[in-house]
Amino acid sequence: MKVAKVCERMANLRTNLSHHVTHTLMQYPALCLENLSIPGLAKTKLAKSRLDAAFGQVIEHWKHKSL
Image 1 (cartoon, rainbow, N blue to C red):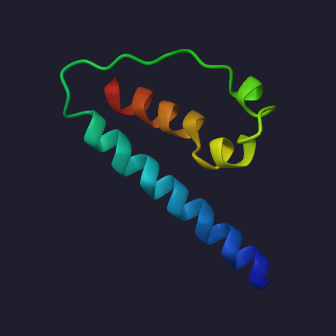
Image 2 (image 1 turned 90 degrees about the vertical axis):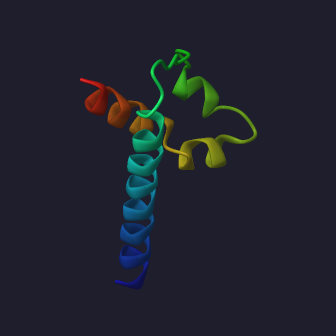
C-alpha cells in the first residue's frame, strides 16, 4: 500500500510538472518540436532519467493546449 501511494504521488507530480511546463511554453508565439524516437531513447544509458522526464506526456499536453 505504501509503494502504491508513492507511485501515485510521483505520477501526480510528473503530470503537474508537465502542465506547468506546457503552460509556460504557451506564452511564446512560436514553438518548434523535434520528432524524437522515445523507444530509441529508452535503449541508452540514461533511459530511466529520460523516461522519467515524460517527454511524451509534455508533448501531448502541449498539443492539447495549442488547439
